[in-house]
Amino acid sequence: MTDTRVDAQRKAELLSTEVRHIDIKSFDARPIVDQMEGMSFTSRDLARATKIYNTMLEDKDCSIFLVIAGSTSAGGCMNLYADLVANNMVDGIIATGASIVDMDFFEGLGHKHYQALEIPDDNVLRSLYIDRIYDTYIDEEQLQDCDHTIGEIANSLDPKPYSSRAFIREMGRYLSKHGKKDNSLVKLAFEHDVPIFCPAFTDSSAGFGLVKHQVDAMKAGRPYMTMDSIADFRELTDIKIKAGTTGLLMIGGGVPKNFVQDTVVCAEILGHEDVEMHKYAVQITVADVRDGACSSSTLKEAASWGKVDTTLEQMVFAEAGSVLPLLASDAYHRGHWKSRPKHGWAKLFA
Image (cartoon, rainbow, N blue to C red; front, side, top):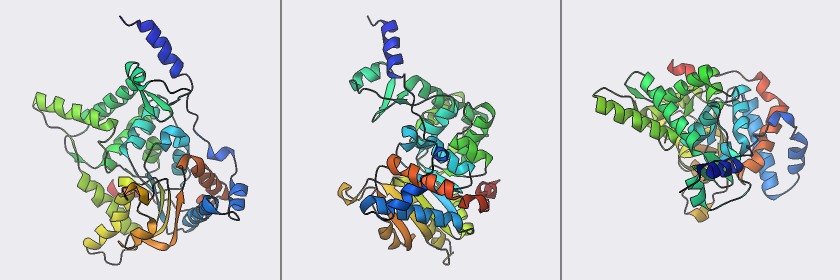
């Protein structure tokens, strides 16, 4: 028979050290990035990528999209992304459901991610209800609270189709009233009219809550809300058409990257043949052609599809958590964001 007191003690030991999210405002990376410009390899790539991002911020006609895939939010970049929104350094977000729900919304509810100071048997972690992302832990019981909260939000809405943007806005509204963390990306995006799109939204904790919402409604014989992925694509394309000049700051690849790039092609199909390719693009990734091109298509390759202009683009092949803080801190301290117009693209759907 399992001693629950021993298990509780062991779980508390494993979940004793919180991940501390980096604060880009607390240090000035400009001298480092300036020196990297005179170096070679990834250092010089990062310096050029940072210069391109600063050019996006300087260009008052440019709408900037932050594209997030992977687990950088859980790994310590969560406040970094929130600071980009709070300081008008991005105008729209396209991300995986995990980044938005399992990580940011999760912490917005008051929960935490923890450093794994040791890597025990994963079967032991399972027995303690601890989930692992590389060297980061999540309390599964807290994650289930996130699932149930998503279900509660769904239950409170009119039973009709919603784009992920529309539903995530309701998540932000919930956090603005009930949240436990001021510096939440989802909350700040709601307050600053920055739309968030998750093209694979239910591939996250949101999926569990939404499935329960639907099943409970079906059993009770009442209508239920649904997610409209076509509306996602249409809405983001609407923004691209109206924005004109656009820039991409992409962390990782996969679905979010392709989704935002495809808006150019979609606009053309809708008859907007004069739509601009994304003028600026930076991608930080560890994927290359050796993975069978699953997520590794370069920005130059995207030009062949008519998605990205190749004049001001830069690939940075690095683990994003190690270089993104330098780029973001440099851009924050150069201060071009202070004179940017606020686009407020979420108001387009009000």
